[in-house]
Amino acid sequence: MTTVATRRPPVRRASLVGTGASAAVVRRYQRYVIPTYRRDELVIARGRGSYVWDPEGRRYLDFFPGWGVGGLGHCHPAVTAALNRQARRLVHVANNYYHEQQALLAEQLIKRSFPGKVFFANSGAEVVEAAIKLARRFGHPQRHEIIAMTHSFHGRTMGAVAATGQPKYHQGFQPLVPGFRHVPFNNLDAVRSVLSERTVAILVEPIQGEGGVHVATPEFLKGLRTICNARNLVLIFDEVQTGMGRTGTLFAFQQSGVVPDVMTLAKSLGNGLSIGALVAGERFADVLQPGTHASTFGGGAVVCASALAVLDVIQREHLVNRAARMGRYLQQRLERLAARYPALIREVRGRGLMVGMELSTGGAEIVKACRRRGLLINCTQETVLRMLPALIVTEREIDRAVTILDEVLASWSISSR
Ligand code: PLP
Image (cartoon, rainbow, N blue to C red; front, side, top):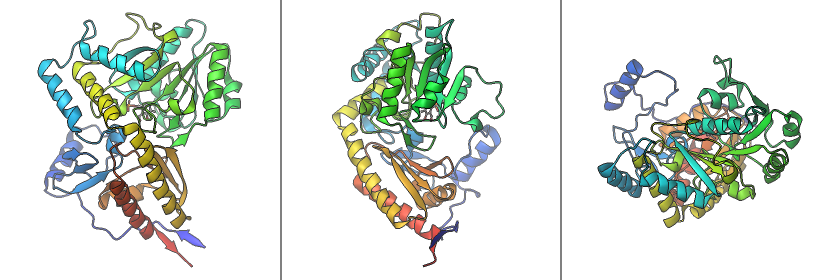
Protein backbone atom coordinates (compact mmCIF):
# COMPACT_ATOMS: atom_id res chain seq x y z
CA MET A 1 0.00 0.00 0.00
CA THR A 2 1.19 3.50 -0.70
CA THR A 3 1.11 6.00 2.12
CA VAL A 4 1.48 9.75 2.02
CA ALA A 5 3.65 11.76 4.34
CA THR A 6 4.09 15.48 4.64
CA ARG A 7 7.88 15.37 4.57
CA ARG A 8 9.45 18.54 3.22
CA PRO A 9 11.51 18.12 0.07
CA PRO A 10 15.23 18.71 0.47
CA VAL A 11 15.41 22.09 -1.23
CA ARG A 12 17.19 25.34 -0.63
CA ARG A 13 15.13 27.84 1.35
CA ALA A 14 15.38 31.45 0.28
CA SER A 15 14.50 33.32 3.45
CA LEU A 16 13.31 36.88 3.31
CA VAL A 17 14.65 37.55 6.76
CA GLY A 18 17.87 39.40 6.19
CA THR A 19 19.18 42.54 4.71
CA GLY A 20 18.50 42.15 0.96
CA ALA A 21 16.13 44.16 -1.23
CA SER A 22 13.34 41.62 -0.70
CA ALA A 23 13.67 41.81 3.08
CA ALA A 24 13.38 45.61 2.99
CA VAL A 25 10.13 45.41 1.03
CA VAL A 26 8.69 42.81 3.41
CA ARG A 27 9.62 44.89 6.44
CA ARG A 28 7.72 47.89 5.01
CA TYR A 29 4.66 45.72 4.36
CA GLN A 30 4.80 44.45 7.91
CA ARG A 31 5.03 47.98 9.24
CA TYR A 32 2.58 49.78 6.94
CA VAL A 33 0.22 47.44 5.05
CA ILE A 34 -2.95 46.09 6.69
CA PRO A 35 -2.41 42.33 6.83
CA THR A 36 -5.52 41.10 5.00
CA TYR A 37 -3.46 38.67 2.93
CA ARG A 38 -1.42 35.60 3.79
CA ARG A 39 1.50 36.40 1.53
CA ASP A 40 4.00 33.93 0.18
CA GLU A 41 7.66 34.63 0.88
CA LEU A 42 8.30 36.25 -2.45
CA VAL A 43 8.82 39.82 -3.56
CA ILE A 44 8.28 40.32 -7.27
CA ALA A 45 10.26 43.05 -8.96
CA ARG A 46 9.47 42.52 -12.65
CA GLY A 47 7.65 40.24 -15.02
CA ARG A 48 7.69 39.22 -18.66
CA GLY A 49 5.47 36.64 -20.36
CA SER A 50 5.10 33.59 -18.11
CA TYR A 51 7.97 34.63 -15.83
CA VAL A 52 8.58 36.96 -12.89
CA TRP A 53 11.82 37.86 -11.15
CA ASP A 54 12.52 38.77 -7.54
CA PRO A 55 14.78 41.73 -6.65
CA GLU A 56 17.69 39.33 -6.24
CA GLY A 57 17.28 38.21 -9.85
CA ARG A 58 15.77 34.76 -9.22
CA ARG A 59 13.32 33.73 -11.95
CA TYR A 60 9.95 32.05 -11.34
CA LEU A 61 7.62 30.37 -13.82
CA ASP A 62 4.26 31.98 -13.02
CA PHE A 63 1.36 29.54 -13.42
CA PHE A 64 -0.98 31.74 -11.40
CA PRO A 65 -0.31 35.23 -12.74
CA GLY A 66 -2.19 37.73 -10.61
CA TRP A 67 -4.83 35.16 -9.54
CA GLY A 68 -5.84 34.86 -13.17
CA VAL A 69 -5.36 38.49 -14.14
CA GLY A 70 -2.37 37.89 -16.40
CA GLY A 71 -4.18 36.25 -19.30
CA LEU A 72 -1.58 37.51 -21.77
CA GLY A 73 1.28 37.05 -19.32
CA HIS A 74 3.24 39.79 -17.64
CA CYS A 75 3.85 43.08 -19.45
CA HIS A 76 2.54 42.00 -22.84
CA PRO A 77 4.20 44.48 -25.25
CA ALA A 78 0.97 45.27 -27.13
CA VAL A 79 -0.88 46.10 -23.90
CA THR A 80 2.06 48.11 -22.55
CA ALA A 81 2.22 50.04 -25.83
CA ALA A 82 -1.53 50.69 -25.85
CA LEU A 83 -1.63 51.97 -22.30
CA ASN A 84 1.46 54.12 -22.84
CA ARG A 85 -0.04 55.61 -25.98
CA GLN A 86 -3.32 56.31 -24.23
CA ALA A 87 -1.63 57.70 -21.10
CA ARG A 88 -0.01 60.41 -23.23
CA ARG A 89 -3.40 61.53 -24.59
CA LEU A 90 -5.97 61.07 -21.84
CA VAL A 91 -5.87 58.94 -18.70
CA HIS A 92 -9.34 59.19 -17.23
CA VAL A 93 -12.65 60.85 -17.87
CA ALA A 94 -15.47 60.73 -15.36
CA ASN A 95 -18.70 59.19 -16.53
CA ASN A 96 -20.59 62.47 -16.93
CA TYR A 97 -18.68 62.80 -20.23
CA TYR A 98 -18.07 60.48 -23.16
CA HIS A 99 -14.76 59.14 -24.44
CA GLU A 100 -13.91 56.94 -27.38
CA GLN A 101 -12.18 54.02 -25.62
CA GLN A 102 -15.14 53.12 -23.39
CA ALA A 103 -17.48 53.20 -26.37
CA LEU A 104 -15.17 51.00 -28.45
CA LEU A 105 -14.63 48.50 -25.64
CA ALA A 106 -18.35 48.18 -24.91
CA GLU A 107 -18.95 47.59 -28.63
CA GLN A 108 -16.26 44.91 -28.83
CA LEU A 109 -17.51 43.08 -25.73
CA ILE A 110 -21.07 43.05 -27.02
CA LYS A 111 -20.06 41.93 -30.52
CA ARG A 112 -18.13 39.02 -28.99
CA SER A 113 -20.71 37.93 -26.37
CA PHE A 114 -24.43 38.67 -26.83
CA PRO A 115 -26.55 41.69 -27.82
CA GLY A 116 -26.92 44.20 -25.00
CA LYS A 117 -24.98 46.90 -23.16
CA VAL A 118 -22.06 47.17 -20.74
CA PHE A 119 -21.44 48.86 -17.38
CA PHE A 120 -17.80 49.36 -16.37
CA ALA A 121 -16.33 49.20 -12.89
CA ASN A 122 -12.91 48.34 -11.50
CA SER A 123 -12.98 44.81 -10.13
CA GLY A 124 -14.81 41.54 -10.04
CA ALA A 125 -16.62 42.21 -6.79
CA GLU A 126 -17.85 45.55 -8.10
CA VAL A 127 -19.44 44.07 -11.18
CA VAL A 128 -21.00 41.32 -9.08
CA GLU A 129 -22.46 44.13 -6.94
CA ALA A 130 -23.70 45.77 -10.11
CA ALA A 131 -25.33 42.50 -11.18
CA ILE A 132 -27.01 42.15 -7.78
CA LYS A 133 -28.30 45.72 -8.02
CA LEU A 134 -29.53 45.13 -11.56
CA ALA A 135 -31.44 42.04 -10.44
CA ARG A 136 -32.86 43.79 -7.38
CA ARG A 137 -33.94 46.75 -9.49
CA PHE A 138 -35.52 44.45 -12.07
CA GLY A 139 -37.54 42.66 -9.42
CA HIS A 140 -38.40 45.69 -7.32
CA PRO A 141 -40.55 45.84 -5.25
CA GLN A 142 -42.01 42.30 -5.37
CA ARG A 143 -38.96 40.11 -5.89
CA HIS A 144 -35.45 40.34 -4.48
CA GLU A 145 -34.08 36.85 -3.73
CA ILE A 146 -31.07 35.55 -5.62
CA ILE A 147 -30.22 31.87 -5.75
CA ALA A 148 -26.46 31.28 -5.61
CA MET A 149 -24.34 28.16 -5.22
CA THR A 150 -22.50 26.63 -2.31
CA HIS A 151 -18.70 26.78 -2.72
CA SER A 152 -19.13 29.76 -5.01
CA PHE A 153 -16.90 32.81 -4.82
CA HIS A 154 -18.03 36.25 -5.93
CA GLY A 155 -15.78 38.73 -4.11
CA ARG A 156 -15.31 40.57 -0.83
CA THR A 157 -17.70 43.52 -0.86
CA MET A 158 -20.79 43.07 1.31
CA GLY A 159 -23.18 42.05 -1.49
CA ALA A 160 -20.61 39.80 -3.15
CA VAL A 161 -19.68 38.22 0.19
CA ALA A 162 -23.34 37.48 0.91
CA ALA A 163 -23.63 35.93 -2.57
CA THR A 164 -20.56 33.79 -1.92
CA GLY A 165 -21.61 30.35 -0.71
CA GLN A 166 -18.83 29.73 1.77
CA PRO A 167 -19.47 30.47 5.47
CA LYS A 168 -15.77 31.13 6.14
CA TYR A 169 -16.06 34.36 4.15
CA HIS A 170 -19.11 35.44 6.17
CA GLN A 171 -17.47 34.95 9.54
CA GLY A 172 -17.40 38.14 11.57
CA PHE A 173 -19.32 40.25 9.03
CA GLN A 174 -22.91 39.39 9.96
CA PRO A 175 -25.53 40.63 9.51
CA LEU A 176 -25.04 39.91 5.83
CA VAL A 177 -26.97 41.52 2.99
CA PRO A 178 -30.21 39.50 3.02
CA GLY A 179 -31.86 37.75 0.12
CA PHE A 180 -29.42 35.04 -0.96
CA ARG A 181 -30.34 31.33 -1.01
CA HIS A 182 -27.47 28.91 -1.46
CA VAL A 183 -27.92 25.50 -3.04
CA PRO A 184 -25.47 22.78 -4.12
CA PHE A 185 -23.75 23.35 -7.47
CA ASN A 186 -24.89 21.17 -10.40
CA ASN A 187 -28.12 20.26 -8.62
CA LEU A 188 -31.25 21.44 -10.42
CA ASP A 189 -33.63 19.88 -7.89
CA ALA A 190 -31.97 21.92 -5.15
CA VAL A 191 -32.46 25.08 -7.21
CA ARG A 192 -36.14 24.24 -7.80
CA SER A 193 -36.64 23.57 -4.09
CA VAL A 194 -35.84 27.17 -3.09
CA LEU A 195 -37.69 28.96 -5.90
CA SER A 196 -40.42 31.23 -4.59
CA GLU A 197 -42.45 34.28 -5.57
CA ARG A 198 -39.56 36.33 -4.12
CA THR A 199 -36.92 34.85 -6.46
CA VAL A 200 -35.56 37.27 -9.04
CA ALA A 201 -32.25 35.82 -10.23
CA ILE A 202 -29.85 32.88 -10.31
CA LEU A 203 -26.13 33.58 -9.98
CA VAL A 204 -23.57 30.95 -10.99
CA GLU A 205 -19.94 30.55 -12.08
CA PRO A 206 -19.73 28.32 -15.19
CA ILE A 207 -16.63 26.89 -13.51
CA GLN A 208 -16.17 27.45 -9.79
CA GLY A 209 -12.60 28.66 -9.43
CA GLU A 210 -11.84 29.50 -5.85
CA GLY A 211 -14.35 26.81 -4.86
CA GLY A 212 -11.99 24.14 -6.17
CA VAL A 213 -12.23 24.20 -10.01
CA HIS A 214 -15.60 22.50 -10.40
CA VAL A 215 -17.13 22.60 -13.89
CA ALA A 216 -20.87 23.18 -14.28
CA THR A 217 -22.49 20.47 -16.39
CA PRO A 218 -24.19 21.67 -19.61
CA GLU A 219 -27.42 20.08 -18.30
CA PHE A 220 -27.24 22.19 -15.15
CA LEU A 221 -26.72 25.43 -17.07
CA LYS A 222 -29.46 24.50 -19.57
CA GLY A 223 -31.78 23.68 -16.69
CA LEU A 224 -31.07 27.06 -15.08
CA ARG A 225 -31.85 28.75 -18.41
CA THR A 226 -35.17 26.92 -18.62
CA ILE A 227 -36.11 27.87 -15.04
CA CYS A 228 -35.17 31.52 -15.63
CA ASN A 229 -37.17 31.65 -18.88
CA ALA A 230 -40.22 30.09 -17.25
CA ARG A 231 -40.20 32.37 -14.20
CA ASN A 232 -38.82 35.59 -15.70
CA LEU A 233 -35.61 35.41 -13.61
CA VAL A 234 -32.27 36.98 -14.45
CA LEU A 235 -29.64 34.35 -15.24
CA ILE A 236 -26.27 35.78 -14.15
CA PHE A 237 -23.01 34.07 -15.07
CA ASP A 238 -20.01 35.22 -13.07
CA GLU A 239 -17.21 34.93 -15.62
CA VAL A 240 -14.75 37.06 -13.67
CA GLN A 241 -12.30 34.15 -13.64
CA THR A 242 -13.47 32.08 -16.61
CA GLY A 243 -13.76 34.94 -19.10
CA MET A 244 -11.38 36.21 -21.79
CA GLY A 245 -10.39 32.93 -23.38
CA ARG A 246 -9.14 31.11 -20.32
CA THR A 247 -11.37 28.05 -20.67
CA GLY A 248 -10.88 27.54 -24.42
CA THR A 249 -13.70 29.78 -25.63
CA LEU A 250 -13.69 33.56 -25.21
CA PHE A 251 -16.39 33.17 -22.54
CA ALA A 252 -17.12 29.90 -20.77
CA PHE A 253 -20.85 30.18 -21.50
CA GLN A 254 -20.06 29.61 -25.17
CA GLN A 255 -19.19 25.97 -24.41
CA SER A 256 -22.54 25.20 -22.85
CA GLY A 257 -24.76 26.67 -25.52
CA VAL A 258 -26.51 28.63 -22.77
CA VAL A 259 -26.51 32.41 -23.10
CA PRO A 260 -26.90 34.22 -19.78
CA ASP A 261 -28.90 37.43 -19.31
CA VAL A 262 -26.05 39.08 -17.45
CA MET A 263 -22.33 38.29 -17.36
CA THR A 264 -19.62 39.68 -15.11
CA LEU A 265 -16.02 40.03 -16.31
CA ALA A 266 -12.85 41.34 -14.67
CA LYS A 267 -9.46 39.69 -13.97
CA SER A 268 -7.70 39.27 -17.34
CA LEU A 269 -9.91 41.77 -19.18
CA GLY A 270 -7.31 44.50 -18.55
CA ASN A 271 -4.32 42.13 -18.18
CA GLY A 272 -3.38 43.82 -14.93
CA LEU A 273 -5.21 47.12 -15.14
CA SER A 274 -8.21 47.36 -12.83
CA ILE A 275 -11.34 46.84 -14.85
CA GLY A 276 -14.61 45.02 -14.42
CA ALA A 277 -17.43 44.81 -16.94
CA LEU A 278 -21.07 43.92 -16.47
CA VAL A 279 -22.58 42.74 -19.74
CA ALA A 280 -26.39 42.89 -19.70
CA GLY A 281 -28.49 41.34 -22.45
CA GLU A 282 -30.95 43.48 -24.38
CA ARG A 283 -33.91 42.77 -22.11
CA PHE A 284 -31.94 43.94 -19.05
CA ALA A 285 -29.69 46.57 -20.59
CA ASP A 286 -31.80 49.51 -19.50
CA VAL A 287 -32.75 48.36 -16.01
CA LEU A 288 -30.02 50.51 -14.45
CA GLN A 289 -30.97 54.06 -15.32
CA PRO A 290 -29.15 57.37 -14.58
CA GLY A 291 -28.71 57.78 -10.85
CA THR A 292 -29.16 54.10 -9.98
CA HIS A 293 -25.52 53.03 -10.15
CA ALA A 294 -22.09 54.56 -10.79
CA SER A 295 -18.33 54.22 -10.48
CA THR A 296 -15.96 57.21 -10.48
CA PHE A 297 -13.08 55.25 -11.99
CA GLY A 298 -15.15 52.81 -14.04
CA GLY A 299 -14.26 52.59 -17.72
CA GLY A 300 -11.42 55.12 -17.71
CA ALA A 301 -9.54 55.78 -20.93
CA VAL A 302 -6.28 53.96 -20.10
CA VAL A 303 -7.92 50.82 -18.71
CA CYS A 304 -10.30 50.64 -21.67
CA ALA A 305 -7.41 51.11 -24.13
CA SER A 306 -5.61 48.24 -22.36
CA ALA A 307 -8.66 45.99 -22.52
CA LEU A 308 -9.09 46.79 -26.22
CA ALA A 309 -5.48 45.76 -26.75
CA VAL A 310 -6.14 42.54 -24.81
CA LEU A 311 -9.08 41.67 -27.06
CA ASP A 312 -7.03 42.49 -30.14
CA VAL A 313 -4.10 40.30 -29.04
CA ILE A 314 -6.41 37.41 -28.13
CA GLN A 315 -7.84 37.54 -31.65
CA ARG A 316 -4.60 38.20 -33.59
CA GLU A 317 -2.61 35.55 -31.76
CA HIS A 318 -5.47 32.99 -31.75
CA LEU A 319 -5.13 32.68 -27.99
CA VAL A 320 -8.56 31.15 -27.41
CA ASN A 321 -7.65 28.10 -29.51
CA ARG A 322 -4.24 28.11 -27.94
CA ALA A 323 -5.77 28.04 -24.44
CA ALA A 324 -7.86 25.02 -25.46
CA ARG A 325 -4.82 23.26 -26.96
CA MET A 326 -2.37 24.09 -24.18
CA GLY A 327 -5.04 23.32 -21.59
CA ARG A 328 -5.45 19.82 -23.06
CA TYR A 329 -1.69 19.38 -23.00
CA LEU A 330 -1.40 20.56 -19.39
CA GLN A 331 -4.25 18.33 -18.28
CA GLN A 332 -2.76 15.31 -20.09
CA ARG A 333 0.59 15.89 -18.43
CA LEU A 334 -1.10 16.23 -15.03
CA GLU A 335 -3.16 13.07 -15.65
CA ARG A 336 0.11 11.24 -16.17
CA LEU A 337 1.37 12.63 -12.87
CA ALA A 338 -1.87 11.46 -11.26
CA ALA A 339 -1.20 7.96 -12.56
CA ARG A 340 2.30 8.09 -11.01
CA TYR A 341 1.05 9.33 -7.63
CA PRO A 342 -2.34 7.66 -7.14
CA ALA A 343 -2.13 7.99 -3.36
CA LEU A 344 -1.44 11.71 -3.57
CA ILE A 345 -3.53 12.94 -6.52
CA ARG A 346 -7.26 12.34 -6.48
CA GLU A 347 -8.40 14.09 -9.64
CA VAL A 348 -7.37 16.50 -12.38
CA ARG A 349 -10.16 18.71 -13.67
CA GLY A 350 -10.91 21.97 -15.42
CA ARG A 351 -11.32 23.47 -18.89
CA GLY A 352 -8.65 25.05 -21.05
CA LEU A 353 -6.06 26.78 -18.92
CA MET A 354 -8.18 26.73 -15.76
CA VAL A 355 -6.96 23.58 -14.12
CA GLY A 356 -7.27 22.06 -10.66
CA MET A 357 -5.53 19.03 -9.24
CA GLU A 358 -7.20 17.65 -6.15
CA LEU A 359 -4.83 16.09 -3.64
CA SER A 360 -5.47 13.70 -0.82
CA THR A 361 -3.33 15.89 1.40
CA GLY A 362 -3.00 19.60 2.17
CA GLY A 363 -1.56 21.56 -0.75
CA ALA A 364 -0.11 24.62 0.99
CA GLU A 365 3.30 23.07 1.63
CA ILE A 366 3.43 21.73 -1.91
CA VAL A 367 2.82 25.25 -3.23
CA LYS A 368 5.70 26.49 -1.08
CA ALA A 369 7.99 23.71 -2.25
CA CYS A 370 7.13 24.50 -5.89
CA ARG A 371 7.94 28.13 -5.26
CA ARG A 372 11.33 27.27 -3.83
CA ARG A 373 12.01 25.39 -7.05
CA GLY A 374 10.87 28.32 -9.18
CA LEU A 375 7.20 27.55 -9.94
CA LEU A 376 4.27 29.69 -8.76
CA ILE A 377 0.92 27.95 -8.36
CA ASN A 378 -2.01 28.29 -5.96
CA CYS A 379 -3.84 26.05 -3.54
CA THR A 380 -7.55 26.54 -2.92
CA GLN A 381 -9.96 24.74 -0.60
CA GLU A 382 -6.87 23.36 1.18
CA THR A 383 -6.37 20.40 -1.13
CA VAL A 384 -6.79 21.68 -4.70
CA LEU A 385 -3.70 22.88 -6.55
CA ARG A 386 -4.94 25.53 -8.96
CA MET A 387 -3.18 26.64 -12.13
CA LEU A 388 -4.22 29.55 -14.34
CA PRO A 389 -1.20 30.00 -16.62
CA ALA A 390 -1.14 32.78 -19.17
CA LEU A 391 -2.78 31.98 -22.51
CA ILE A 392 0.61 32.47 -24.17
CA VAL A 393 2.13 29.57 -22.20
CA THR A 394 4.29 27.21 -24.27
CA GLU A 395 4.58 23.41 -24.18
CA ARG A 396 8.11 23.79 -22.85
CA GLU A 397 6.87 25.93 -19.97
CA ILE A 398 4.18 23.36 -19.20
CA ASP A 399 6.82 20.61 -19.29
CA ARG A 400 8.96 22.61 -16.88
CA ALA A 401 6.06 23.20 -14.49
CA VAL A 402 5.09 19.52 -14.52
CA THR A 403 8.72 18.49 -13.94
CA ILE A 404 8.88 20.73 -10.86
CA LEU A 405 5.58 19.36 -9.60
CA ASP A 406 6.85 15.85 -10.20
CA GLU A 407 10.02 16.53 -8.20
CA VAL A 408 8.04 18.01 -5.35
CA LEU A 409 5.45 15.21 -5.30
CA ALA A 410 8.20 12.59 -5.47
CA SER A 411 9.70 13.93 -2.28
CA TRP A 412 6.24 13.97 -0.66
CA SER A 413 5.20 10.44 -1.35
CA ILE A 414 6.88 7.71 0.59
CA SER A 415 5.98 4.32 -0.76
CA SER A 416 6.06 1.26 1.45
CA ARG A 417 6.15 -1.31 -1.26
N1 PLP B 1 -16.05 36.44 -9.05
C1 PLP B 1 -15.22 35.40 -9.26
C2 PLP B 1 -15.74 34.19 -10.00
C3 PLP B 1 -13.91 35.45 -8.82
O1 PLP B 1 -13.10 34.41 -9.03
C4 PLP B 1 -13.48 36.60 -8.13
C5 PLP B 1 -12.10 36.68 -7.62
O2 PLP B 1 -11.38 35.72 -7.52
C6 PLP B 1 -14.37 37.65 -7.93
C7 PLP B 1 -15.66 37.54 -8.41
C8 PLP B 1 -13.95 38.90 -7.21
O3 PLP B 1 -13.07 39.63 -8.02
P1 PLP B 1 -12.18 40.80 -7.42
O4 PLP B 1 -11.16 40.17 -6.54
O5 PLP B 1 -11.59 41.47 -8.62
O6 PLP B 1 -13.10 41.69 -6.67
